[in-house]
Image (cartoon, rainbow, N blue to C red):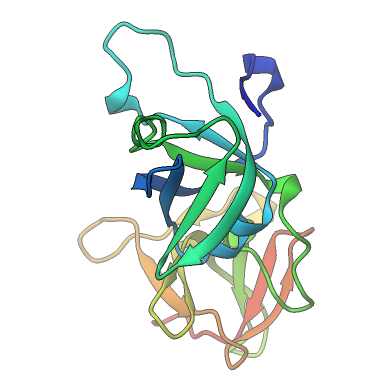
Amino acid sequence: MTQQAAPGAVPPDLVELGRITSAYGVKGWVKVQPHSAQAEVLRSVKQWWLVRPAPQVAAGAPAHVPTVYAVAQARPQGSTVVAQLAGLSDRDQAEALRGCLVMAARSAFPKPDDDEYYWVDLIGCDLYSDADGAPHLLGRVAEVLDNGAHAVLRVARLRAAPAGGEPEVVLDAKGRPAEILVPFVRAHIHGVDLAARRIDSDWPAEY
């Protein structure tokens, strides 16, 4: 089933999972390049929300409303995912969706196994270090990267403010916001508390 949703019907927790790169075959299948480690989610959720990126929306046109598609089938194809979406029956229909962003509601994601985390849930968590013996704030996760072997947290450096105020941005020697990269591996990550938006580690502050 395909349906353009009214703005109020669009889930508030949509997460971008990938982008349609082309049609696949002649029967209406599409090929998707997943973002990072999101291929499993693409294959698991039952609905995709498609939206065209801003450059593809005509100047002066109203903002594009996401269109929801039921996923009939989805399977891996090398580093991509190919899928049959309800309502698409030929290559031209599939090719018309080239460039669309593929999104899904975070609430529809399969429950992760113990000690496994969706990268989207780690973004915005505060990273603490006990490398000096007492926990102190290192910064906030701005992005999760994949180096081929494991995930890496890109952390915007913050300094805890006195008297419980808002943390202060740490600047580098050139006056730019400082960042650190922290491997998301058991050797350095001691605990993740998503409810508290907190990650504990032993990563030294001088990195």
